[in-house]
Image (cartoon, rainbow, N blue to C red; front, top):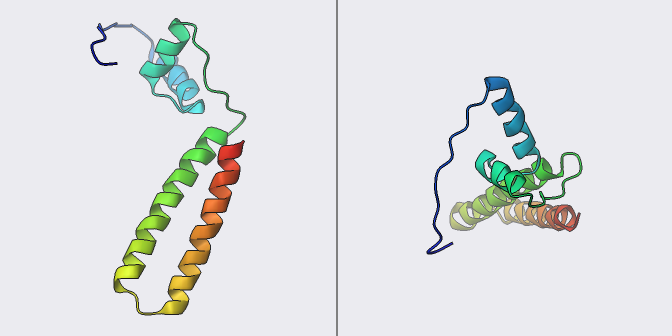
Length: 103
């Protein structure tokens, strides 16, 4: 996008119209402005069936939390059984994440 010229567009929408557009944008994991840009330029929207976008977002958050947990355990926890349980949980999250991303 470097060197690309941009300009601003102002729209007047009712609150209900804006909320409906925001729900549609969230359903395909886009910001409202990106959703409007893609629709206005007739670009295809990401394919999402049901709640997959929400599931993928939650899996990313869970994976991030698991990595934070692992780092903290490695630094401060002497209990090897607890570390092993955390590793097992993280492996399960990674497996689930691969399955969700393959959809």
